Image (cartoon, rainbow, N blue to C red):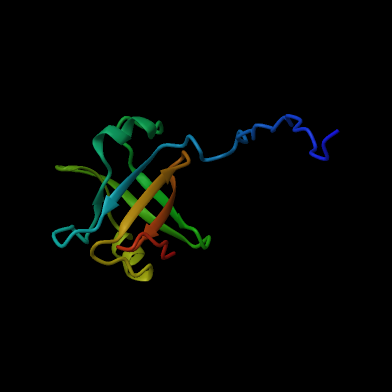
Length: 126
């Protein structure tokens, strides 16, 4: 008889995604380019379907970064679409957002967004 142990298949549990996970929550990104408007940032028109509050969303959005800090930014309808406006400059300044940064916005409903900020090397900065 051989000293080798026979291999027995072991079932591997499949992880469940919690119902409150942001795995399927809608998101969009923006890359900060030299010609990016620092007064506000436009929400992609195709994304607005996820913002069920109103046909044309307006009000005050809450932007939360990974540290848990929050900023309130006005959502306005303008000629070029729906934008994050009043409060956007402050958000950028206080998070040291610079040219070539990549910002990912994840929508949680009720004008609540989490924002992940990555530098040009792909590392999260916030």
